Image (cartoon, rainbow, N blue to C red; front, side, top):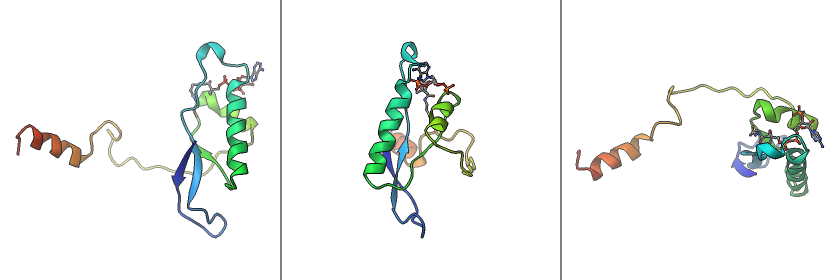
Length: 104
Ligand SMILES: CC(C)(COP(=O)(O)OP(=O)(O)OC[C@H]1O[C@@H](n2cnc3c(N)ncnc32)[C@H](O)[C@@H]1OP(=O)(O)O)[C@@H](O)C(=O)NCCC(=O)NCCS
């Protein structure tokens, strides 16, 4: 569970909020309630710490686990600014590498 910065609003003034990611159960142990128990424990922790809500991006295999615990789909949208986003090194990292190789 990562505490991500978020814009405050009148209803949700907190400027950070819990975000769940990389939830993973060993394939040999799936379908036994392990994932549900882990996520339920994280929900309880976030609630006990006073956070108003939790966010995540669900995969197909995770959707059922989250929905059963009360998570609902939201209206989030995304615009991809570069088709290779995530695979490219940021421009400043590329130029630092070129400099270290003496390429200007
Ligand atoms: C998503 C993931 C973490 C779920 O882990 P899991 O330990 O299998 O989760 P659970 O066992 O609690 O629930 C999975 C299914 O088993 C069922 N189940 C839960 N307890 C059960 C039990 N005691 N006996 C039998 N089945 C059970 C649930 O109904 C659920 O079915 P559903 O998803 O169709 O609703 C796992 O599939 C995974 O690691 N996927 C790959 C990574 C991934 O996509 N992670 C999610 C990122 S958002």
